[in-house]
Length: 201
Image (tube, rainbow, N blue to C red; front, top):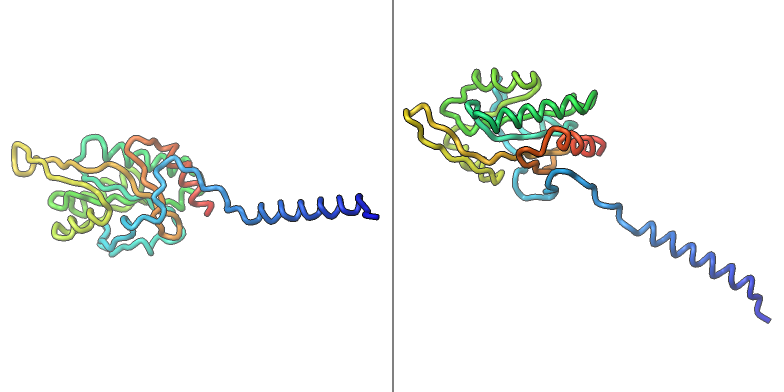
């Protein structure tokens, strides 16, 4: 005679084991970001540029920090100061973790943006922010490697020109991997929220 209660117990144990195995085999849910997730992108993977203090810089210099990069120019009337202000505000919103954020401004106007001009400009937003410089002959290759756009727009005089440029920010995690692209106008809170996730690892 079959012991039905024993058989039922075996089925219950087997079922519980299968459920546990299925749960263990499931991958963790993808992280939800407010910026555009570009993890694994084959662009914006690095740089080797001189900062406003004359020091050569690469992403490896900032291991352990989240890095936010913005391309612009110091005579930009609105987009650039707004983006850098949001970056500075995001740092403030991070509280103590703000020390683990490195803001970087890369000039697309090497004719007018001297190291002295850039230093005065970026440190006005936050003393820890760095401005990086690419010589005119290297700027095209750099922006292409980031899929960033810029174009000189003539003015009334040779020195009164403006610059059209893409206005998003590139966000890297503390290991130096490109992770996010934040569109212009996303806001400081959205950037801070995503940086919190990246800093937690």
